[in-house]
Image 1 (cartoon, helix red, strand yellow):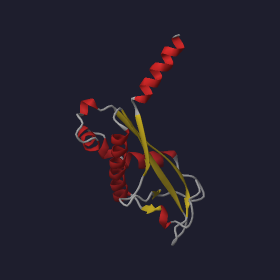
Image 2 (tube, helix red, strand yellow):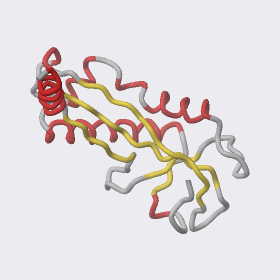
Image 3 (tube, helix red, strand yellow):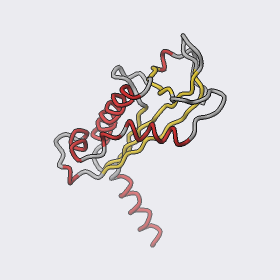
Image 4 (cartoon, helix red, strand yellow):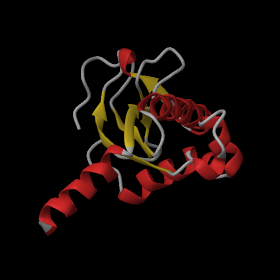
Length: 151
């Protein structure tokens, strides 16, 4: 009986949380990679380099005003949300130029609001991250690469 109660409560809890994931993309919706600065193509980038990229592109998204931007029309006190950036890195070759070390961030957002609101929020979040990445790093669309990058 206790197991049934636990399973039901976990089911109800998980059904109240919606997750949305998107790749870092340009305004046209094309996924982009970030060229990792000072990275050697013969070695994988250091974890600290990738963490620094994550932190630098997400700086502007930590305040309450940003929360209202991502969830318009919703009272900030009603929103329970968390997001994180994960990604993978590897070596890619552009159609013109030499190989480089890339990082492809994936943005994940969990919230207590609807799927539609969560998807809209993660899209807005990704747009903000793209703008920050474009200011600070060389950003290359996947369509400008010779073939699929090797992670």
